[in-house]
Length: 120
Image (cartoon, rainbow, N blue to C red):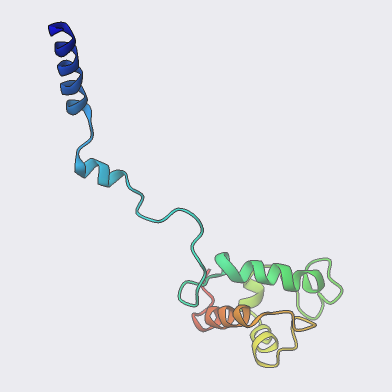
């Protein structure tokens, strides 16, 4: 019985010596929540929203193999920044994309992106 108590006591002391401290445990916690962060008008960028939107909504007509690439060629952020017609066509006259396929939320996020100076 004494031997069992001694082993138990020894194991407990060893566990306590090698256990992490409260400070160490706090350091192990992630600083950012895991999972995707929702895109808002405050954090919208080309890489988290606008790029995918232009790729899905514009590329079929204005991409390298598009039928109207001669009017405007979408080839990334530079093509958007260099042509003021893009913001006008999408947000002001709402003639693009054809069929008016942008939701109110997409238009709001895109407007915020343009307003912020088109951050990457």
